[in-house]
Structure formats: structure tokens, C-alpha cells
Image (tube, rainbow, N blue to C red; front, top):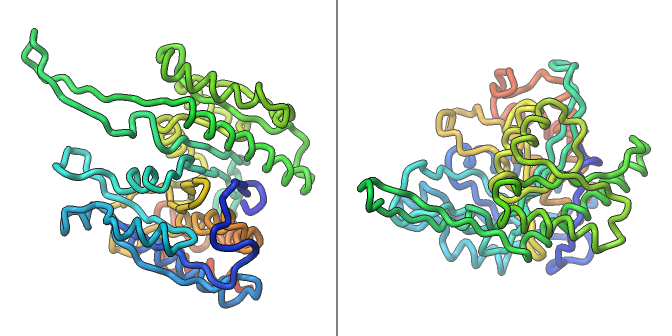
Length: 383
């Protein structure tokens, strides 16, 4: 995973121009198993710092957010958390949020608000298989899903009315797709396709051309998805720098079908917010579990690593949660902070544990605890 998912952005180096001696990382465990997997990621970062001479020293700041915090205080994302992230931190890790499925007065998802407040306009989700002793027939998969992070239905502008004819309730939700957000998301996708290709060529892994797949449903949503489609296509069509990147389109329903039938044909996939959310969660099933898939919320000036899984209240507090997604998310954070060798060390340690297959949490068919898996990754890291 270390080499094929390496990411590049134009992240402004506010805090360093070369590997820093000290980095301050905000930790937002939030709800449920977030309180178990974020501490696991912290342990791995601390082990990395203590054992690798070229690694920075990490300073961690625990920060509040989440539904549980809302229940206590009436605030899901405190302004203090945002201020500390903006003014004191080089990056952050977010655990999980227990957003209720029913309407709760005054509550709004803190991770959605965090993405908007810090302009983290892309969510980057690598989905990569690891062949293991436990599952030697795992198909080779290496997909990078680029999800637009600020618009679509996630602007959360909903309303409810009464139909005058029937007297029954009618619910409405506004959907926003802008040329501005679509273009910068599309540009990120093509840039990452080029970056992945350079790494593959240097490793002589294969000689296929890089490819970006644009996901949409413009045959039905001709205005919103139509704008998304034509804007992302325009990124390549109007810039010769991307002449070496192939481009294709998939309707979102066809994308889901082909993702499960032939996942190996995809390279970089770029999608509006809702489609990207659904596709990337589904893709996790191809590599074992949501518990192994990381993500990074990326902007031009800040990055927040975030495991793809939810808060899993059914296993919270039982030391059963898979820490791998959170640990890999810490690796993604380091990549975006230009600490590529340190990120690779984390990825390789995780892969070693998965390949061996003897210490796995229940979601992967094992019976090991969160701490046992974390300890095994740290042991591999320190070899």
C-alpha cells in the first residue's frame, strides 16, 4: 500500500518546508470506537517518532466533537476545537461520529461542519487489497476514490411541507453542484492519477496508462450531474498536462455493478459527494472490511485523516474495533505533510500484520483485540 496510494497535493507548507522536528496533531476521537482507534493511531505515531531518526516529534492535542459531546453540551463542533486546529495544529485525526438517523433539534454532523469550516474539499479514499495467508485468493485491487467533500446533498438544506391536495407530508432536499468545486475536485483526481503513474513506473509494476473514471447520473440529473460531468471532463480536455491520462465515464449504478464484478479495471475514481460516499463504503467489502480502509479530508491548507468506518456502537468499549483504518489514516496524514518515508513505514507494518493473518480483529474473521493488533503493528514497525 505504501507506494501505490501515495498522494500529492498543493498543500501549503504553513508549518514546515522540510521534515519538521515537531508537529502538532489534533486528535478528535469523537464517538463510539473513535475513542479506541484514535489512541491506537497515536501509539503508532509515538512509536514511529521514538524509533526513526528522521521522524518528527509529535505533540498531540485532544479535542472535542461528536454527538456524545452534543448530548452533554448542546454543541457538536465547539468553536474552540476549530480555533485550535486552525491556529496550533499541522493536521488532525478524526475518529467516528454517531449521527442519529432521526432528526435531533439543533444537531448537525460535526465532520461535515469540519470539512466545510477548514475547506477540506476532497476526501481521498485508497482501497487496496493485501494478499494474506488467511485469504491467499484475494484479487489485486488498487483503487483511489476521490470524493467531492463540500457539496451535493450534504449541504443539508432540507425542508418539510404539507401537500395541499393530500394533506400528507412532503420532504425536500436541495442539491448543490458548482463548477468551482467540481473543477478543483477533478483537478485533484487527474493530479493523483499522474502521481500514481510515476510511482508505478519507477517500481516497474505495470505499463498500463493511468485512468480517471468520472461517476455521475447525468442521464437523469442532466443539470446538476451534467455540470459535474462536463466540468471534470474539461479539466483534462483543457490542459495538455493530462494528455497521458485516460478518461472514462460510468453512470453511478453501472459503477457499483462493475466495481464488484471487475474492480481491477479501475484506477482513480472521482465522484460527487453522495456517490463517492456510497461507492467507497461498498468498495471496502472488496478488501475485507470498513475497518481497514483509511481516508484523508484534504484542502489546500489542512488535512484531517479519518477512518472510513462509523462509530460502531454495538462494539464500542469492548476492545474489538479494528484499528487499521485509523492507523492507515495517520499514514495518509503524514503523506500530505510530505513525510513519505514515515508513511511508508506505517503502511508496510500494517501490511505485514495483514499478510501474516494471525492477529486479526473479529471483522476480519479473527479474535484479536484492538490493542493486540496495534501492538503487532508497532512490533513490525520497530523491526
